[in-house]
Amino acid sequence: MRRLRSLAKLLVVVCLLSLAPKMDAQFSDNWQPISAEDLALKDNPANPGSPAMILERKIYTDDEKRLQTEWMRIKVFTEEGRAYADVEIPYVAKSNVVDGIRARTVRPDGTVIPFDGTIYDKVVAKHRKFGYDVKAFTLPGVEVGSVVDYEYILHWKQALPNYIRHPQDYVLKSAGRFRRRLGSFSKNSSRATPFSSFAQQTSD
Image 1 (cartoon, rainbow, N blue to C red):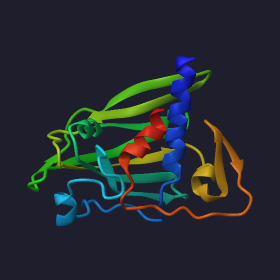
Image 2: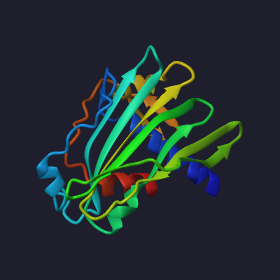
Image 3: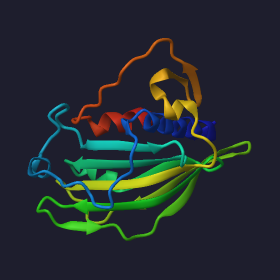
Image 4: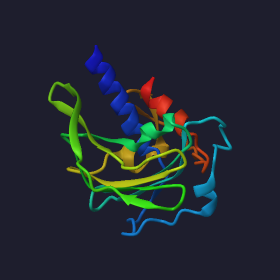
């Protein structure tokens, strides 16, 4: 039962990642600059009291090369929010390879601390012939007021599934199960997405 719960949680995370805003391009080698406003931000205007929030999140896709590149930028507001220095990147071992991981911490005074530590492979759950893993690492020097950046490349060993390439056409019916959506809908991404809400969705 515990393994099945872990499997369900991981599949929900993978599904949420597939629903993020996408662009048909690849990231630059340089980090996008952090505005003075974001660096000085003390609380989440959309959800006051949040331990952290997502400042920006993007996924670039390349169907021909069968890859996705995700970039996440998180602002830490509280001691509790420092837990988001511990990053876990989920993937399905049989279908995916994760590489190109890079990350950094930017402190409130603008000091940049690049990540050059160890990346660990952790098995989250196994179900029959499938393995569900995470790439895990901890960003250095994260304190209240810091901004965390990380990005990675997710390679698909086969063609990208339809629910990854066209998530707007699907709805999550249950963990690991998708149902084709009748009609279409648009998802608006807010710059002030409360990270606590995202974390709660993936941890309940």
